[in-house]
Length: 123
Image (cartoon, rainbow, N blue to C red; front, top):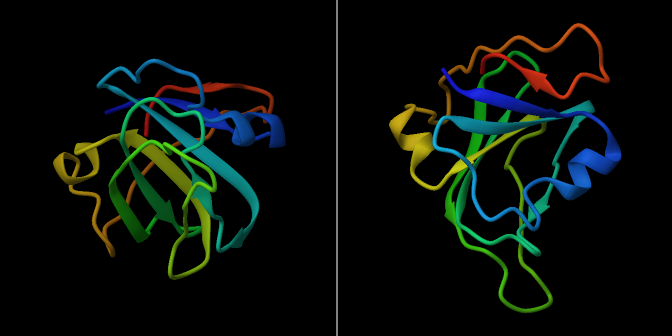
């Protein structure tokens, strides 16, 4: 079980892991979108590699980008799924594999009751 920060507002989603020195091993970020789409991410101002896991509305993994490196020069590359996704989970590099998050697997999570909440106890 991972301690998960929920990124539901535009500001939270834009900031993500930028400028953070690290992410604790038992933590993840869950990006929540109003509509499923081909949500693209980049690693601008990030300091460490991560795994990105895109999920559909049912929590099924539709795409995984493993060991995505920090961006070292502009323009930064973007990473996006091959199918529409409603959620994206960011984890420490290698964590997706340890959690067995592969295309077709399912990730169960409970969203906070209030959209303004920033933490959920499990993902």
